[in-house]
Length: 65
Image (cartoon, rainbow, N blue to C red; front, side, top):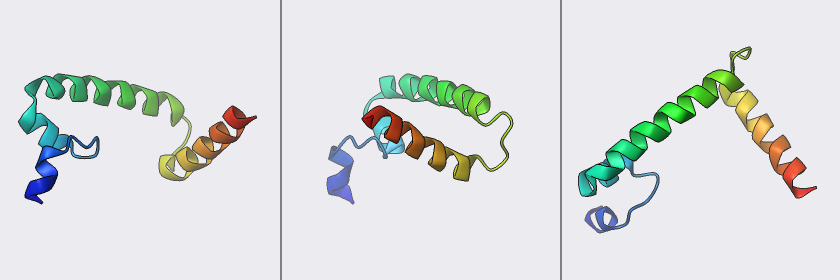
């Protein structure tokens, strides 16, 4: 676990905050943007988890084509 503290993984938001306080602002900003996007995307959808997966797959297929 201690060795992982050195690696700035995108999944480890807490560790990033501890290492670089500047990341805190970026994380907060990104979180706000993601929240806004989520609200817009899942405005008429209740099961955002299932829908998001299908949307992601569809997007990937379109991008490949």
